[in-house]
Length: 190
Image (spheres, rainbow, N blue to C red):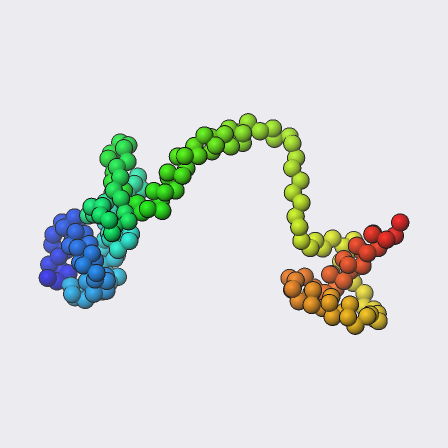
């Protein structure tokens, strides 16, 4: 069958045909070669008609961004996906994996705790101020003016400071040295 022959069918048949080929452990590139067309042509054709490729399967994305499974798989011991029905104005089938299912179950188990946090947040007093203390280096110099000076230092101390500056390359050496001197002065000048 060629791509032009396949395009003469309705979109659900086209999607089923391509999904069947993908389920037969064929890549979209191989399917495209068999149909005598480029992979991007197939992808663009299906995307324009509201289909998206999820887990090697083209799935229709509805008007309300609800996901509807066109070619649903049955649950088996080797298949880690499950079909569930979501009830709203229309009934939609959604394919989810084990991790998502476990996350939803975990959220359901902690429903009361989550509701408690949400209620606290909605009813909290906005006048209370929480000061966040951040660990790490803060450069808070009285002015940004710098001078050049020559100072003799202990070699071991300088090597340690130089190694320290290498760890924190986001700061320049001049600012780190100035902050170190300021902190020393504030600590011992009493």
